[in-house]
Image (tube, rainbow, N blue to C red):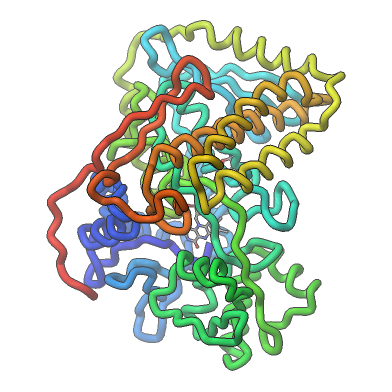
Length: 505
Ligand SMILES: Cc1cc2nc3c(=O)[nH]c(=O)nc-3n(C[C@H](O)[C@H](O)[C@H](O)COP(=O)(O)OP(=O)(O)OC[C@H]3O[C@@H](n4cnc5c(N)ncnc54)[C@H](O)[C@@H]3O)c2cc1C
């Protein structure tokens, strides 16, 4: 992390302004109320982080490192904190939070009235099953990063965090919550082969961007969509050039990339003999993925982080607080914690799970009995994700999306008959793959329903190439029917607040 992407600094911008900017960036398919709640909390959140010792550098005049990522407002504040996670872990420990490491949340339990009453989880090293009794659950397990297959062919070599396989989306969906935005199948343009970021880190600090013909790409108001257009037009590879920068400027960029962002960046560039002082850096589109924090795919929540299921909350990249990034995760983590705690205090009866515990254990036993199947689970995953690239990644059309749905139905069945589960590792991997398949069918279904193109290139349909505001200014909601692949579709208008634009800054 090299920035807190959304902070409405007083005197610079306002929560109202941010909500209006994000409405525009999301092309209207966004709920203002959750955005407003996040934006209002963003500055107090930054103050809290400062009080925890997290560093936000200032210049000689005491001004924060503010970067413009929207043409109408500046709300991205540079952060220089390689120890962010350690600091957060320390805070949790001090608060007395009990941490179950190496534990995969697998199923949210509900009672006969559909209210949350627990979680089933599994230790990924020993296979020990856990039944956690609770009246409230906050899902924070990110989006679906292992979704499309990256060009490098490495199952885990993805842009976003590779242990995120849409588990939270699927747990919420199976418990009865609503999902939305699954037609927003994202990808980034980022360092080729390693899929690590550096675009805003370098371009905002004086680097130049060139296309494959040697022409300069205008970086004023640059968006990933514009970069992907260059690629689609056959003018790639794009390259970042820092050769004209001073030693001090390059050294600072290296500091951010090799500490806050990811120490592995340093090894990667060294291994390839890339020194920013004399070599350019090649960019390429990443794999397709689903995310609420960078994109619009998530569990629907209200400004209290509540889902449709009593006692079930969602925050961060798992939730639909669209494009909230790290700020969304922090702010809605806080919102969810406050409300879940209050909700728990208001309940005095103990709730009894319906038959889900037995069915979960039966499912695990069924998977463990698959020792003699022939196909390693990694090969199943590779094939499924290759089909996601073929049929769900843009450009999309009805034929491709129909094929995607058909393949996902077939793969789900073949997980029983073909996938080998040799040990505990295979066991949790097959649970992840079940979720990848479910997310793929959800994305294909939503993409098929939205008969227009929007957020091009991410939802670009060759059979409906135009944006159709008259008919499609609405959310596509997905809920579970009789089984995970039986997807029910409904629609909802975006929630609008009556906000006044205070003008550009
Ligand atoms: C490379 C990169 C750089 C970024 N840089 C910035 C930046 O500079 N500024 C900014 O504002 N935003 C940035 N973002 C976005 C930001 O990182 C995310 O929005 C934020 O981390 C979301 O936090 P989260 O806790 O919701 O999800 P994550 O950080 O993805 O955490 C999800 C966690 O859930 C765990 N998990 C997954 N499945 C399960 C399961 N079944 N059971 C138990 N645990 C599970 C995972 O192991 C993971 O630890 C960046 C994102 C990426 C990918």
